Image (cartoon, rainbow over all chains, first blue to last red; front, top):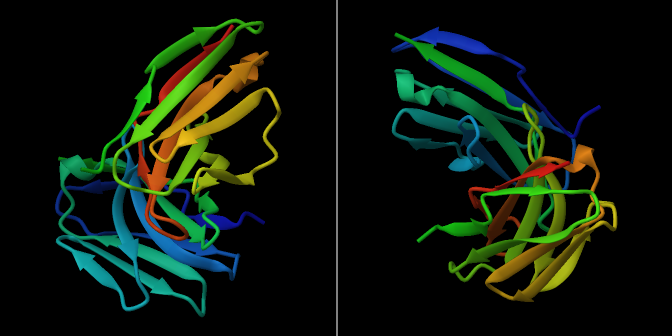
Length: 109
Length: 112
């Protein structure tokens, strides 16, 4: 079983749609959680950190459920520019990061 | 400033060559990382440096040799690579422990 399992996708949605990505992790020593986006042939860019209380940044909402070892990302009112691969990342205090396989989102006009 | 720089952007090397990848950050971060990313796969952690000391080596073959000359610089020395080592090599930095990482643009390496 992979340490970080992510919805395989791909997700193809129309502009304006709401889309949700899910991720589960198995290492209970994991301390911090992130969502990154990666555009084709570019480096991953930090989208947001994920906190137990949930956090929101504009159209993006991230949630963490430590008991279920589950994190999620919700994108509201999708834009064409949201098309990318979304990666969930789980990190231990020792600095070991594990990436999910990524979910590809395509937003169509 | 959340910039991590990497040089070169592209590198083509033969299997008998020796080359080095370089990474620099000026964010005052004390942890730096090397990742390898193959096409359509997520980044895979190779090495972690904390306070300029190697803290994690993910069983990487010895033909990859990391070096951290100071808190801002990270090198990856390459020797006798194989064609399957062709990939995007990403450097990242973060505050220590579980802090968020910032990635450089990567070096696209081709081994012929």
